[in-house]
Length: 306
Image (cartoon, rainbow, N blue to C red; front, side, top):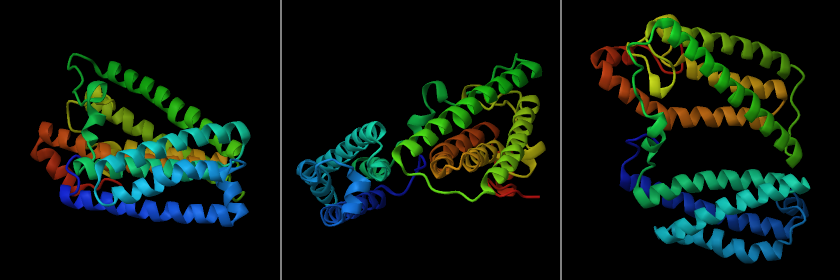
């Protein structure tokens, strides 16, 4: 999913393969719905399967099968219908507390369908759209002092941590309970989560202060450091703030006993690694040249290098 991504022809092939798999899986699911009351209840609740199938089989199963032959219009139809069903089923499950597993399956299918659609239509995923506008990479104004950068960074941490580590996980946890898809965690999960959260938060704060005090900027793309930072936690791993943030998200999931929050953290790590990081590192290479190339060659992205 990087800006370069796989070769267009190869990506096109992967997109077609995905739609073929989705068509087969969708057909198998419908067979299960009509043969197994347990599958029907878990994924459709009390919805009439005949009425749903009248729309879903042609717009999801058949459209996915046609998209597997590279028909772009069919890929658009299958992807649009999958997203619509995911949202509608989520509303239904939230109101009725039924069909929670169906919601998760359809949201996963919708996300994968979007990627496959881009592969079929464009031969790549246009991840560069993520780093445009207010999220475009720009260095911080050089006139700002260290105190201003550190203060701005601390404000950003409070805002982002409050939203991504408190608000969003709380909503996810509530939906998990409402949809009836929660799983039992061992009793040690919460204490372990607290310890990991404390350690990861310490790493995040140390990394943010190091970046803002030495680099002359902030973690925000719109006010990035003016100097390459290889001090503090950046001596051991290239992206300590990302490591900290993902670990924090997983730790919050352990504290809440929510596997969906843990999955949310894992999904965030994949999105950052494959969609955002290539653009960030390309920007660093443009601005710092050989210095960043040497740093990238000697310090790993995820695994600490002592």
